[in-house]
Image (cartoon, rainbow, N blue to C red; front, side, top):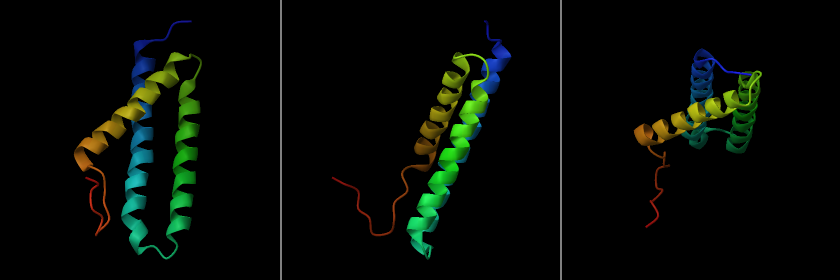
Length: 99
């Protein structure tokens, strides 16, 4: 069972989109937690939605070959690396970086 290059490219792009969904949602949640009336509820609901969406997307991208979810996961991790390098780690006001 061979995998076409186009399928690998679609899996990589799909994994990257899932990464944007997951880590973009995480950034959105972290930025809104200080002003939230119920920050724990926001955090838990956000995690549940992000994890369910990412898991469902990875399962859907898995398709018929074992290599496709690995390529999708590479796209997912690439977005995480890109977001950390461009956005940095968000910090709350008053937080000090550990020395």
